[in-house]
Every structure is written in C-alpha cells, then in structure tokens.
Length: 358
Image (cartoon, rainbow, N blue to C red; front, side, top):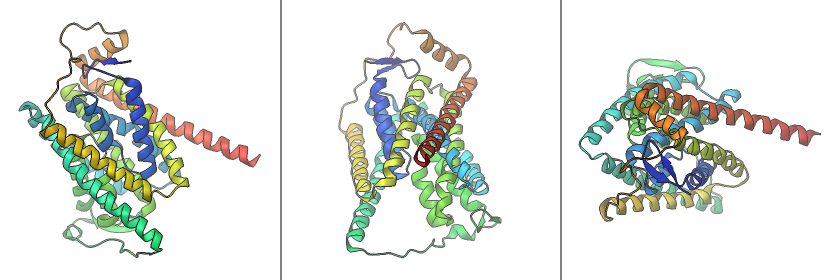
C-alpha cells in the first residue's frame, strides 16, 4: 500500500520505509554509528527526491540522538563544555552547508551533488571499515593485542585560546573542537547525516577524549546540528515532511534498542565486515544510478490536483504558511518521540530488573 507524501509529493510505501528504518536502526545500535549514510540513499532509491531525503533524515537523526543522549545524561557520561565548543563550530558549518545546498539547488545540480557526496563518503567509510573488520578478525584469531597511543599531535593542537575541559581532563585549544564541528556541520547540512563517522574518530584521535564520554558527547552535538539543519531546511525550502519523519523516527528508535541489545551479546567484528560490504554496495549503486542509469522521474509526483486527507492537507498548509513554526514543530515532534522512547526503555529496564530480583 502506497501513501502520498504531501511535501515531497511522491507516493511511497510507509510500511516498507518503517521496515528499512527499523533495520538501519538495528545496525546503528549494533555498531554505535549513525544510520544517515544508509537511510538517505535508501529513501532516494525509493523515489524520494534527494533534496527532500536529506532534511527528513536529518530530522530523524535528531529524534534518535535525543533518545540516546538522554540515557547518557542519566549516566553522567557527557562532556557539556566540549560538546558546546563543537556545537559552535557545527552551527557555523551548518550555515555554510545550507548556503552551498542553496547554490547547487538554484543551478539545478543539488541531486548530483548529494549523489557524488554519498558515493565518495560511502566508498571511503566502507573501505576503512572493511580493512578494520578484517584486521580485528585476524587479530582475534591470532590472539594479538595491539597497544595504541591515546592520540597523535597535529598542527591543530598548537592553536591558541587553550582552555581546560574538566570532565575530559584535557587542556586543549578551543579552536580544535570548533574546527571539527565546522566540518561536521557542513557535511550534515548537505548529506542529512549526523556526522558521527567524522566526529567520533576526531574525538578519539585528535581531541583525545576518554572513550566513555565519546558516545554521549557525540549525540549531544548531533542534537543541535540536526536541529539547526531541520529548521533551516524547513524555513528555506519547506522540505520537511512530518508524515515521513514520524515513520522514520519510530522505526529508527525501535531498531536502535534491538541493535544495542544484540551488540551486548555478540562480537561485532564479523558484523562490521558485513556492514562495510553493504556500504560499498550502496556506494556502487549510487555511482551506477548517477553515471549510467537513465534518470527516471516517477509519475507519482504532483501533476495535477490531488485530493489530500485532512492530516496531509494540514501538513502541507502549515509548511507553506508558517515555515518557521513548522520547522519548530518538527523539532518538538522529534524531541517528544526521542525522550518518550528513552523513558519507556528505562521503565522496562527497571521492570525487568525487579522481575529478576523477585
């Protein structure tokens, strides 16, 4: 059964999108990575225009990040000061990304920009993960223990305006996290991803943060960056589709819970190799679609008068008449679903503990 999205103006199978979002959520929870670099291409393959797939997935990432960061907040595994420095850079990077997005959209090249960005990023990430996965499997079989340095020193560590980050026990230049945030925000605005695939390695190898603080701080940054991306896209283009976003968030949040449970019981080395191969295959599919396949414009787009249901009509009218309010409403929706999921998870976790104790 297909449903008409009032903003993207295409027919899609919402149950199938929910299923895909659930699977991507499982992978995200299993490997501790964001699913934006998988879900956005999937949306594009299903017929959602890239200019709409990017902001809606950013809104989805906002919801899942809120859910995850709430858990880390309760555990106290979050460095707010470091996170705020990265957010400052992320805000500036997001604005630059939106300006770049606007330029390519105005000249009619936004689809090719997004496709090329995903093609190269997926090729790089997939190759790195494949090499790491194979290496981890090989070391595990040979029982080799590799000692690594906490982090190397680069030119970025010599920048001025050094400050102390008590939670992370670091004395770093404020420009280090700001520059990292600038890059993350720029990529998030164009690709609709959370940027964790850049942020997490940078926190480990460049900033040198304690491992236990990285997931929570990364999610904290992602909340603000994704929120800015969502509002700017909603205000400038009215491209957020609340119906699509709701389905994406519900699937992702549920999937992440399952993925985290699976990750606690199994070694993820073999799974990481499989994920790397999947990323490379998606990258190849995007490359083929970009350079070799003929562009097929689905006849599901608006080509006449559509009879919309009351909810779809409300969504379309609100998007056009009150774009800023619409963008804020999409953030509140993600906030409510994200926090609600964290509370429900906490409730059932406590219930299971009480049952076992009894």
